[in-house]
Amino acid sequence: MRLKAPTDGQRPGAQDGGTSAVHGLIRELSTIRAEMLRHEAGVDAALRGLHESYRESARNLIHYMALRRHDLREAQHRLAELGLSSLGGAASHVMQNLEAVLRLLRCVEGSGGPVVSGSGDRVGPSEGHRLLVAHTRALLGPEPRRRRVRVMVTMPSEAADDYDLVRDLLARGMDCMRVNCAHDGPEEWSRMIKNLKRARKETRRRCRVLMDLPGPKIRTGPIEPDGSAERRAGGVGELTPAEPSICVRVGERLILRFDQWPGKPAEYDREGRHVRPASVPVTMPEAFAHVREGEAVWFDDGKIGGRVVKVSEEEVEVEITQAGPEGEKLKGDKGINLPESRLDLPHLTEGDLGVLPFAAGNADLVGYSFVRSAAGVRALQKRLAELGSEGVGVILKIETRRALLELPNIILAAMRGPSVGVMIARGDLAVECGWERLAELQEEVLWVCEAAHVPVVWATQVLESLAKKGRPSRSEITDAAQGARAECVMLNKGDYILDALTTLDDILRRTQSHQRKKRPMLRPLKLATDFAAD
Image (cartoon, rainbow, N blue to C red; front, side, top):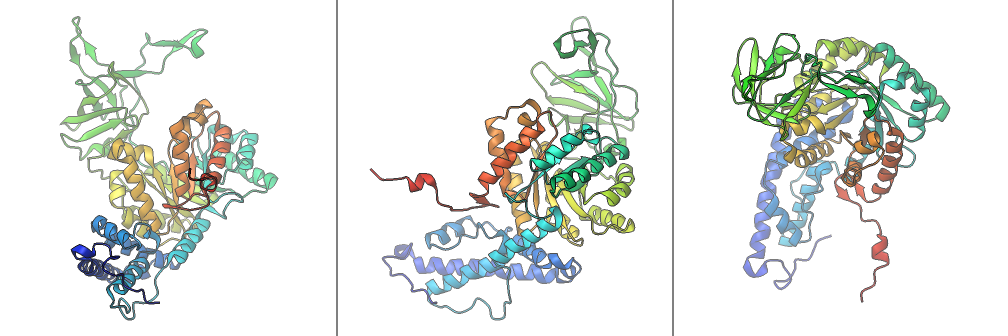
């Protein structure tokens, strides 16, 4: 059908060159389309090396990345004025949407005709949705009976011996058991999985097993106990030694040592002047090989921040720039982030390599912690193949600035395997890139993964107050509802995890009727049905 061009009185912007505006849009979008095709041709050979189920998805991802090289905001406004798609919801079917818009623009212009002869079939909205559903099913199993989004739950150590807990989690809606291989060991992991298998038979519910590799997590080492630091267990009873810590304050120095002697607090003279900085050993001293003066260092999930002021072969000296008004306690075994430093670490640590044989033989999915590059993905795939487990699904945990910058290439490398997903590990990502950018960055990950038809796991602190304290915050409820745009939401362990799971299940079932990915679903609203103008 050929659209009739509006009259001058109807055409948006007709009084100041509406026809010229349409011509400009056609030129701009045609140029972008040609660039998308050039990018596709440039990687055509590489696309043929991917798993057959991902080739069209990879092509769409290439088109999307070419599209997002351009600032389209003005074009989107002009398209909206014409009543056409503004391209904002086209991530899953980029080329098809762009070509449809160009055809309609030429109808408005009056020229009509195809965009380019022989352009071939393109992934459309229905096919994009079908591919995402198929890839999600391959990775996470069939869709739950009452909701679209799966729920993943991190196992506490107690799950190795508490069968009732595992069974109740499964009965209340757990779709994937997450085993964090940075904790416990093969004996405990085996008992957790044994409990799950038993619970699956009893409840007749499906549930997959994800084993997270430890990854190259840099942490503070042990701290010298302070006999004067005591506390009462639960506030009553006998005094017991408090967990050793050192206090760091803004403006003071902290020495990160490469030996393994316990850390010591700062020393002050009688007038309270700072005479010797606090010190703490670090795990993985090799991670500091390329640290340079002026680079940022963050501790304990961003609670403490500093800048490197001096580097030597034995230690790194940091000036504290962020801490509480009265200082901040830094304990042993707390994470260290180096977001601005070059980290030449192995793609798979010794800990990862030690865990992989067990994971390959017992898990449905492997979580690749701290993935940083496509080369790392290929190294993991090679090791899984050597173990005879090429079919194990891989979830790429995006938790560093480098991983975010390399995300399209990392996904393309993972598409050589049969099933892949992406976890937005929002805790480390916020520390690496800045808390103020987290909301923006998680949107970018969702966009890229939708373009690649790759399922997303929404992770870190979902309903955390409810899981740990038994009562959620209002912002947590909203955040959990936002997780409906992903294909899976992860809950961490806590004393009230069963309550958190029940609440999350309810939130996701209610939200899914309003939202699919990043597009609102315009179901009938009761408030609209009941509305009557005065």
